[in-house]
Image (cartoon, rainbow, N blue to C red):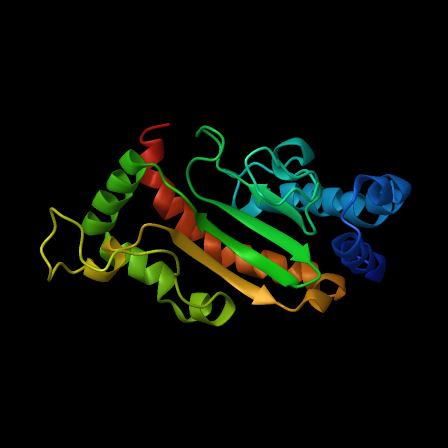
Length: 226
């Protein structure tokens, strides 16, 4: 069975939506969205659910939990465009509340493809727990994010960080540079055309295989004995 992927019509639809971000236009082209964007997204999520059993059984991969809606929440935004111009899916860890902990994610858009994961906006208590975990296990973290395979397929650990080592840790702590992070993001940006490449799904899997050990490390102090 061939790996699921998008056809050129997916990017064509998203480009057109970017130019015509209105309810009347979307309603007139909703079948194109269903056929060329939503259905391939669901096929990819369902294939990932099967592949995650092998190397990431702790991640949730279902259309209901993973697929982001195309509709934007405009209540508190000055931008009242009703639709997102990208298609995205997230794969969170089991055993933690929604939007907590570290997971993996990908999106496609007319501007590019992003594949990766990590921890985007940890609550203060979570960040404190993760930093404690890093301070006591920095060799394990380094083995993940400084490995040749991680650097080749993903790059460097990124995200917002403090200027100084956080209070409570010495400036010369062995994990000083990693303790400064407020976000822990690891991913790869690819051109929009990659969404329709025959290598799309295999590349998705390759990057997720490198990022999952990082998400597992970050979730360990949050999951405890669960």
